[in-house]
Image 1 (cartoon, rainbow, N blue to C red):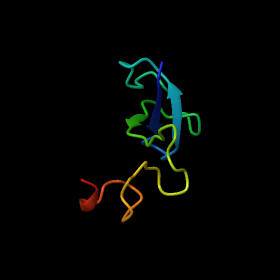
Image 2: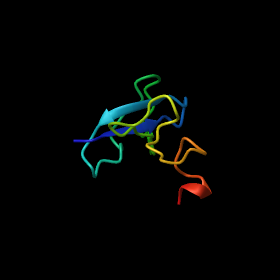
Image 3: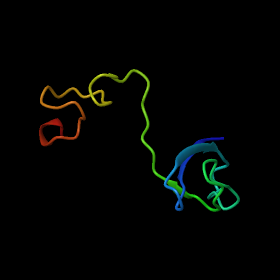
Length: 73
């Protein structure tokens, strides 16, 4: 099962929870304040072999560290 990131709409606390892919967090409680139904949010990830000191990319571009600039394409 994958980990998903959630954000409490009451207190703003962000936390991760291992859930099935179809689970939207409707039965979860915020571990910080106990509010119901935190929102599932997009979270960042890191790929194996990435350069941990440059913003997280395996960029072959010398002009940036993200691999998202116009010269990388």
